[in-house]
Length: 404
Ligand code: PMP
Image 1 (cartoon, protein in one colour):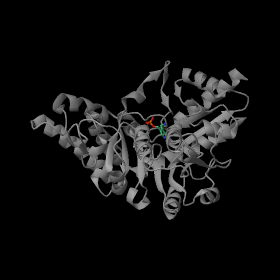
Image 2 (cartoon, helix red, strand yellow):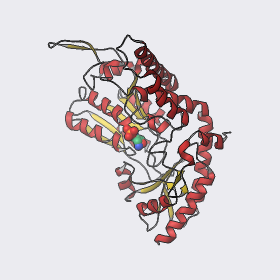
Image 3 (cartoon, protein in one colour):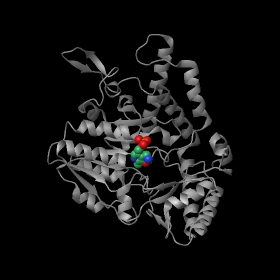
Image 4 (cartoon, helix red, strand yellow):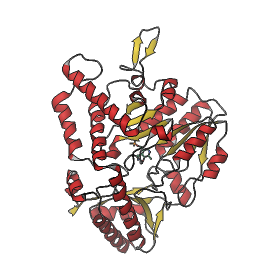
């Protein structure tokens, strides 16, 4: 059992007031809050070891390089990657996906097919559309059902020897659905296709094991797991990372440069051109340590309790409908109230100190599927409480009264 008050005291922002009311932060799907150890680690980096990495022989440069590479090793252990050079530092999920789609531009031919799921964030749709436009490949969509689940029989039927890559999120940001990725990975491989998993919404809740999953790529952002913004990870299987061309050219990613020909550095440096977000990369390791100290079993237990409690309490509100009703879901409740625009509810409850996300959640195709302009999304983290859910329910009822 988590000592929630102790956990909450790790996050200075949570004791803040917003609009004169205690902050209730339920926008964890957008970004998580940061514990003091993470905030301190950023300052410590700049106070004690700031230097550029992988180049200087001087002491600070060595210290910074060691800390950066230790963080890479921490991520490797966390996701159980076989090699540390399969773990690339990025600026976030979006960057990681674009790195892969850029690489596949050199592989795909007209007639090839890319499968994307109906549940994706725009970050995992648009780069694939751009790739298909560039190469003449065709984008096909794995459809979803009313519960907000992908339809596996349709997925099976879409897969063929034309399929070159499948892309799907581990957990949907808009609805919270946990997708059956183990099945999807196996099926993609059975037709010889590669598969990318967008883990942006999964890593706050669970520890992915990329070797057990056997996925080809797994991407996520640091800012959703208590880490700094502008950080992220792209895991890629060694064979794939060797096959793909570099994404950006510049310093750090080369072996030798001449005006006639440049040769590229070995992994992971081939994909890490220029001076990276050194502080961010190091502190991402601190954030992962923090999450592991809290413990993913504890995190899941707390979040599932919040999900069950929140679902029950919100459904007591008349006219409230939840979108995303799969049994396999994480601590996200996306809902609307009959006759009221989600934006109006969001604005009123913000005045009461409650932070939720309203709108299409960068997943417009899902909103089109349900024929709605958007939803109100309350996404819970392990540091949230049932009392905060009570505040949400009271605030939503108040907004409903004011707006009807
Ligand atoms: N995919 C999913 C499922 C997400 O939830 C997000 C962030 N909302 C992204 C991709 C994009 O992540 P980022 O903006 O950190 O690059």
